[in-house]
Image 1 (tube, each protein chain N blue to C red):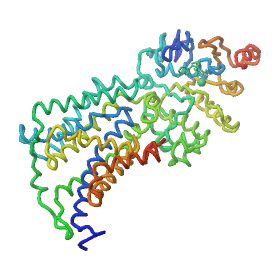
Image 2: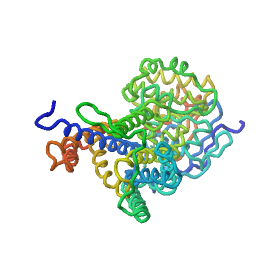
Image 3: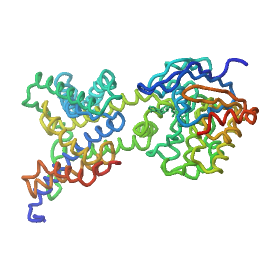
Image 4: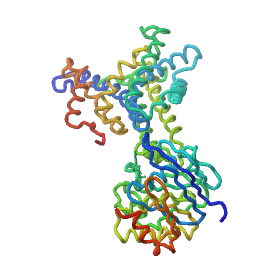
Length: 234
Length: 294
Ligand SMILES: Nc1ncnc2c1ncn2[C@@H]1O[C@H](COP(=O)(O)OP(=O)(O)O)[C@@H](O)[C@H]1O
Ligand SMILES: [Mg+2]
C-alpha cells in the first residue's frame, strides 16, 4: 500500500483538563470509505474535532497528503482539502439554504456544481430561500453534507449523518455516500448504527475509551459480529 | 397650523428634529456596538472615546494638514479604524476565550486612557469646528427652518445604517459575519480566517464610531468628554434594542431619539431620564431586548 491519504498516529487530545483521546491511530487510503464505530462517549466526535483542530489541545501526528496538520489552525487545516460535517449539523439559522450551501469557500478545483448537489438532494433546491434551520432534520443533514461537496475537499469527515433520521432518509444518505465514493471522494464516517455502516464502508475502526481497539474489513464484518457487539452494545 | 396639542408647531417640530439628530447618533453608535458584540462577544466600552477620536481627527486634519470636512469624513474613519485594528490585534484578541467581563474592563480602561490623553493635550473646554460652507444655511420648510447641516446628518446616518445592514444581510462577507456570530469555530473549520474577520469587524465598528464623530464635530463642540456623555445613552439603546441585533439597534436608536425629543416638549423634566425609564420597562417585559433573541 502506498502512503495513505490520511495518517493519524498517537493522537491525544484534551478538553481543558480532561484527557479524552489516548493515542488514536487511523489510516485511510485515497478513495476509501472508512467508519469509526463505538459507543456513546468513545471519542469518535473528539477524533474528528481533533483532526480539524477544534479541540483545546492535541498532540501526536496527523498527516494529510504529506502535510502535518497537528500545529495548524482550523482554517488552514480545511484549506488542505478537508470537509467537515459536524454531529450537530451546524446549519446557520441566520442564513437561508442557499447561503448555507455557499458558505464554505472553494478550497480547490473539482468540487461538485450546485446543479449536481441539487440532483443529489432535490429538496435543497425547492427550499433554497428558507432559513437553514426551518428545514426538517433530514434536509438539514443533506444541507450539511451538500455544502462541503462544493468546495473541492477530497476527504470528508462525516459525524453520524444517520443519527435520528427516518429509515428512508438514512437510505438516501447511504446512496449518497456510495455515489461520493464512485466520484473519488474519501470518507471518514462516524457511526453508531453499524447496520448502516455495513452498507457503505470498506473498513471499520472500533473505538473505546479514546483509543482505536480494532479494525475490521467490511467483508469480515459478519464473522466478527460477536466481537463487535461486545464493543458496541450498551 | 400654529399649535398642535396646545404646543406651538415650531417648538414641536424643532424638538422633533433635535430628537431625530440625536437618534441618528444613537443609531450609528449602537449599530457599531451591535456588530462588534455579535462577532467578538466584546462589549466595546471604548466606543465613546473612539467617537470622540473621530471628531478630533477631523479637527486635527483641518488644523495641521489643511484638509477640510469632506476629507475628514473619508480619512478620520480610516485612521481611527486602523487604531482600532491595532487595539484588537495587540490586546482585545487575547480575551476572546475569557468571560465577557474582561473585554468590558479592558475597553472601559482603554476608553478612560484615550479620553485622559486628549484632555491632557487639548483641555476640556472644547474646540470649534465649522459647518462646511456647502452645508451651511437653512431651508424654510414653511412650518419651521431646517438647518441644512442637520438634515444632512440625519440623511447620511440613515444611508450609513442602510449600507451596513445591506453589507451584513446581502453580501458574502456578511454571511461569514452572521455565521460566525452563531458558530465561529465551525466557520473557521470551513477554511475562513475567522481571527482576521474579527479584526476587520472591530476596525469597521470603530471606523463607524469615528464617522459619527466627524458628523458630530460641527454640531457639538469637539471635546474629550463628548463621547462619554453620549455613550451611556447609547448603551441604554443597545440594551433596549437587544444586544447584537443590527436592525434593532437602528430602529431603537432613531425611535428613542424621537421619544426623547417629544419628552422635551411635553414633559421637559423627564427628558434626560426617559430613555432609562423605557429601558427599565423593556427589560422587565422582554429581558432580551425588543429585537433580541432570548
Ligand atoms: N466539550 C467537552 N468538554 C469536555 N468533555 C467532553 C466534551 N465533549 C466531549 N467530552 C467527553 O469526551 C469523551 C468523548 O466524547 P465524544 O468524542 O463526543 O464521544 P462520541 O462521539 O464517541 O460519542 C466523553 O467522555 C465526553 O464526555
Ligand atoms: Mg459523537
